[in-house]
Amino acid sequence: MSEYMKMAIKEASFGIRHGHGGPFGSVIVKDGKIVGKGHNEVLHQQDPTCHGEVMAIHDACKTLGTFDLTGCELYTTAQPCPMCLGAIMWSNVKKYYYGCTIFDTENIGFRDAVFYDHPEYEAEQVDHEACLALFEEYQSIQDKKIY
Image (cartoon, rainbow, N blue to C red; front, side, top):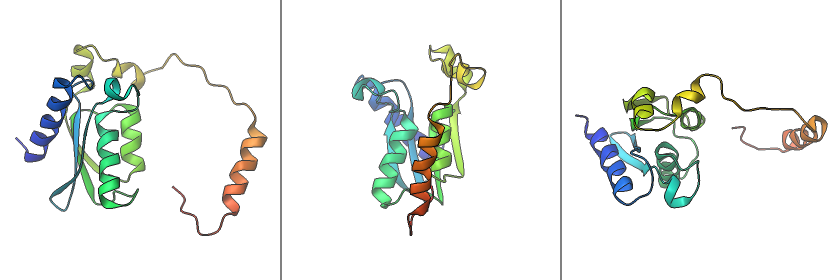
């Protein structure tokens, strides 16, 4: 077993033993050193975005003092949900390793699989011009990082 996956499992175990959330733990590694770790804290934080991968990304960004995790790898106990996959991509982590699949996750009562198919949510565009004005304001700022 990978040493880093062992740490991700340890992180997840801590979370489930303390009632923080599901069995999801993650670690982020850069140059052979763990720079971030996190576990599911949805119940503990009362926040549906506090998944293990997101918490590990927060920790790594804080540790490294940057929002750009280029050169890092992520180890996580389960295949990332779409939200976490988006966070991984936005953080520039180019490679991640996972233990369980979305089907394994579904078998223990989580509904990740539905988000990969056709979610039952509605979306409607409103106030396009006002939001475009905000984008134009942002575009006019000098020395900004686009991310």
